[in-house]
Image (cartoon, rainbow, N blue to C red; front, side, top):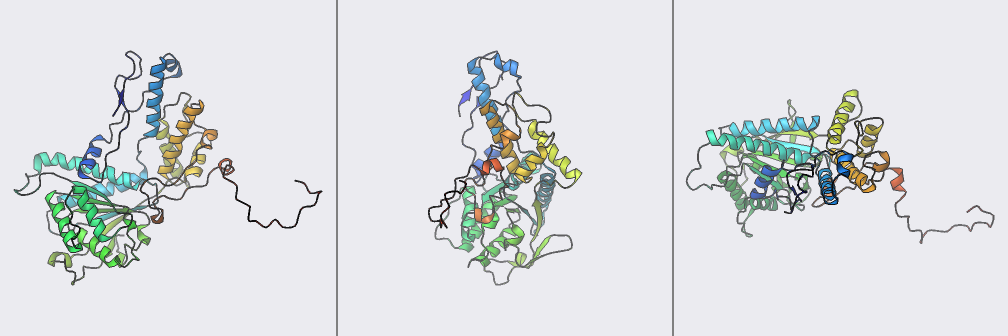
Length: 423
């Protein structure tokens, strides 16, 4: 990391501004712990009025501008009514399951929603908050590990389902999180047994499988995938599956909603070679939670959306910003039309708009600035076939006109135009 300090008595900030380094790899035990401890460590740029800014030295101006850009690039994830509902369900399920001393299978949770809707971050934040609470309780209530058990405690394990997923590859991803040695000759049954051992020895309470709909249920190994999920449900951890379009993915094949709205599954097959008396007598159950975008159909919906925009507005560091910049006039309607109420697109539109406002010197966000922001789907490690990128809302007409014209070389020219035709 590179630290940049303003000049003494500059009035900018007494603390050093640290340029972002490589983010922690949450798919490893060490990386997850590092992310959990540092996830709220970013300090936004201080508010300065234009008069104070102009009085700064060129060096301090450059420092403050860099800090402002970093602030706009790291807009905080704000809680929404939808994410609050999902977080409450997750925390309740994780806490209840972890306090359950019985041998029964713990019910899991499925988080379903469209791309760029904040499913992963909502789930990760809820799990990190639970882990902090659980580690605090451990200091007073949790006994020391038994002899022979690993002393590295991993209360939460976060695993991304491989893009080309198989049950065996999924098991290997779980073991990679713990840094366990994996024998390439191991069978699926052996890998499942090794996963059980790792979860028990690391005293893992929550296992998150992200992008679970990468599992293709129409493939030859779809029955093995179902067997794997059934086995994970018997590991006495809270299993959280996160994905796009879960109800239609095939993962719920053979399941039906009961009177409470939960998904109930058939018992384990008695001929499964890894089954035991406990798992064959236990049905697995999931709570299915949908993380939806903002709506704009009722006064209450609009109020929630405007409140979210007001929260983002308070995070911007633009010199010509004014109260109601994002919430006044037709701006909420404009932002909703551009983003469809998807929280990821809202953050991207506003963040990129703030950067453009600095580049152009307008130092405020308006429709003219946002018209020049193109929302692009995709990013690293996303699987378009699984719907992870989401659907990009229509872009402004002014941006559509910038598209490269279609190649007309092979078009039929038709009847030659007369010399009097208007060209």
